[in-house]
Length: 93
Image 1 (spheres, rainbow, N blue to C red):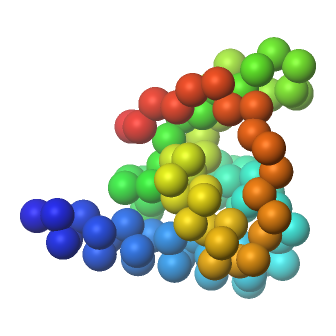
Image 2 (cartoon, rainbow, N blue to C red; image 1 turned 180 degrees about the vertical axis):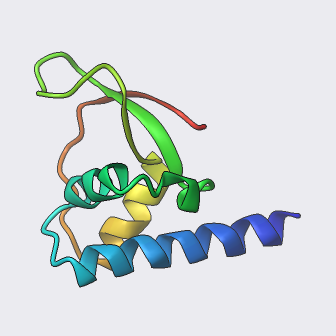
Image 3 (cartoon, rainbow, N blue to C red; image 1 turned 90 degrees about the vertical axis):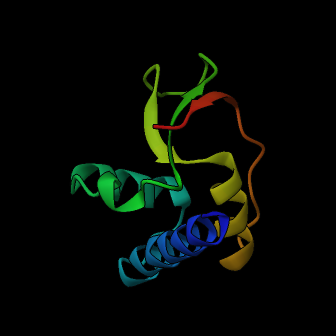
């Protein structure tokens, strides 16, 4: 069961990165928005999360995105310098 979970997570991270590259996105947040606008989050069930940020950011209370763990992995694989996040909480769904 754990192996299947990791394999699924790896496949979803790979697909997320494919979307990022194919669409020439410049940030993970841009890919999150793309996936939200295309209603594709059901394709990312093991890495998705509802994220909430502190109030000074221009975000709604909760936003669809990747989990903090997936964000870290994706940032490393894309050689992005992860910005200091104002993430206040996440809810896996």
